[in-house]
Length: 281
Image 1 (cartoon, one colour):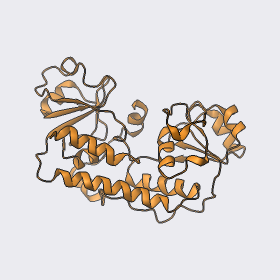
Image 2: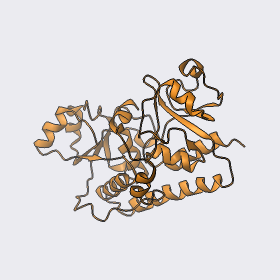
Image 3: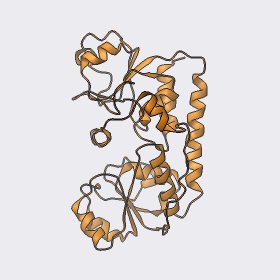
Image 4: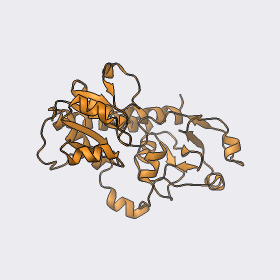
């Protein structure tokens, strides 16, 4: 999570400027051109985000290697773990004879850089925002020979998000802090995907006038006077009083961050978990 936050930490427009540039933030728009893509039959995925999307597209049978950070799941039984994109197991990768190695945008190990220069096909996928995720899904679907699966996946996510928004109609919208990291304290600001999920789930972002992933102090959170703190950190829900002295609200909800920070196949489920937490029946 720390790497994901650091990669995305930069100033982001708010208010009217954001409204002017956001476009239709409630649905995916398919890219008009992703170029000519060669179908890959032996694929290595070195990041869990890519693997999750590949599996949702039906690409499990193409996987011959995945990241060592993958959790155990039936679809990956027998698939070799091959390190990570920053510390790849190059011997295992080369032994698998992949025709495509997939990573997320960001640093990669020198072994991958050297082998890419020698002809290994290494492509990066972006999960930063709806437009980039639509490009990623379209590219991956074509790469595994299932081009129709891309639009279908994006449409499913949109339907699930719309269904959560419908559940919100008529409910009060509590002011919420989404706590992502404790030392330093990092929260979800405006215009990111976590902010969109929060709005879909019927919450108001207490950090609306900050940047994408602001580093904040306890005094600022107290001044925001949130109704709810959603704690997405390890050990979530414990020690909030000591972390944020003077906090008035005692409604602290611990949730797993899965699917909440960046677009992915389980975004609709994540929005539903947020809704259930904010609006208990």
